[in-house]
Amino acid sequence: MKPLLFLPRLVEKLDRLADRVELLLPRPVSPVDWGSTHAALWRQQRFGGHLQAIGETPDTALKDVLGVDRQKEQIEKNTRQFVQGLPANNVLLTGSRGTGKSSLVQALLNEFAGLGLRIVQVDKSDLADLMTIVSALDGEPYRFILFCDDLSFEAQDEGYKAMKSALDGGLYASPDNILIYATSNRRHLIPEYKSDNDGAKVVDTEIHHTEVVEEKVSLSDRFGLWVSFYPINQSMYLAIARHWMQRLGAPHDLAPEWSDELQVLCVRWADNRGTRSGRTAYQFARQWVGQRLLSHSDT
Image (tube, rainbow, N blue to C red):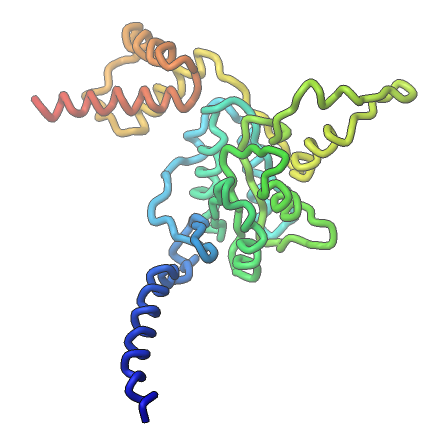
């Protein structure tokens, strides 16, 4: 009978232990309702990850992405093929920062969400979970773009091999309702060094690169569509700023004619930031419209 005397104390200790373990476990997560949700993030946790719905996404439209008409046409056509169930390619968008790469992907979601397009954003640090994400989306009645923004790797990064496998994994065939769109400032996604070419040889007038070089270009080669973005000139920069000043809702009675003085302010804004890009033009427009509306409300 004596062992029974210790039973309540044992139960109490087990309850306390269970309470402590429960604090370590992730909270239950409701599955994403893709019927009402157009975008989600992959969130990594201690014991795994989950898809987290994004309630509000930028309202960027394709007409808002200026100065990249050729690039926009290429990616829009590829995405239209995809949402219609036709063959389409994974896309690598590379080039100067602030030239509209990420904005274009946002605009594609708004353009094609009604046709079943959905986007899941995956951070570089979570790319090791890429195959888990693909498995979670396989079989869903929607078309998914896995979006990796500002992507770059070191050769030893764990996500590097996961990305290669998801793009073209040999015996593995990626589901036909999933594509990968990635943006990067680097064409080959991995830093390239002068020493990488030290072992290159010329054979019958052909250059044969070393295995190091071949490995560094092998990932970008698995994207079927490469689209390059370039720095914009000043006239396009000013045109983008004017577009966003109107788009952000400055009332007509507050919007002055595009004057030399306003143009100087716009150019000075870019000079002070050390860059002239679509992003810089958008930021100037937000600053100017916000100040204009504030001064109007104070009168």
